Length: 451
Image (cartoon, rainbow, N blue to C red; front, side, top):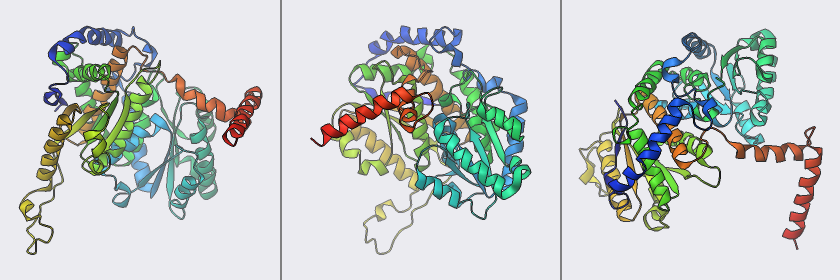
């Protein structure tokens, strides 16, 4: 019951001496993390969360989720970034990417873009159907989420009245302050807490992720138990005894050798959104001060027919981190075909999982021979418990890797740049001077673009 790192496919790319060389930096990162002396130490609440979480709130999450499951055909989750990615990733990983065609309530995620087409599409899915809303925002003023909440709050009140809407709107927000917290108190919405010391991309094991995940019928108790086992096992400071730290060290060594793009690879379609969660976790944590690996992802064998050529023969700037789940709960047996028109009878009498395993092995050999390093992370199976373990594994690896890199893995100063420009261009009060300057820049750009 753990994630195990297989470094056999790094032969020729990294030697033991290089790993020993970074051991000191890894130990320093461990100490900074566990002693709370590193940059961003105000956001370490995730570190002991699997054991120290609010048990009373956890019980309320289960109760609220069951209420939504009973009275709603559709649940709409509003949030952006870490306020939705973790929840959606876990739901699809455990229930499948076709979840909404197989289970009730259907769960849709909005408030994560400013697309009018997408907004209308989600609204159409609630027509003549009972729905509930889970809005996730610490401040309540994040543009994308606040716009969507304005729409769905109005819809709920129009359909169910103020009292009825109160029973169908749930807010995951700040414990004491903020626009959403104030509105929830005024309207009487049930609220759940985003802890002050847990940043958005590390928040999947708080109510931010757990409430939607529970609505989907996942076992959040097993998820937390898996994360708790990871917390205990991954506290060993010696990277030679801690695969989480070894992974953090290896990715930094590869980056120093010019492998600046990490591609997370899974062989399950349902892992697509977990790949997206991974990309936010590492991209937002490490991409600053002119540093950081670029996180990318792929689902094999699907993407071998699109990205495979580049990985095999393109620029040697990529390394792959491949997830391998040893067991499967769902398999498919291939029968013989009398006509054998496709010439595939050599596969008859086998399970599809066996074919996938051979594809996995063949791809590893091809890509490493093509000068693409591969780190293999092996997990027993894709289930609630093991996914909880994997979530914590990546969170801790990201924190340690960021400290080894020399950045604060818990802030995101660059995220604010586009917001300031957008607010100014939209005419938000207080941005008048910036608006004029930006409009002048846009005008100059247009003139230069058209000669």
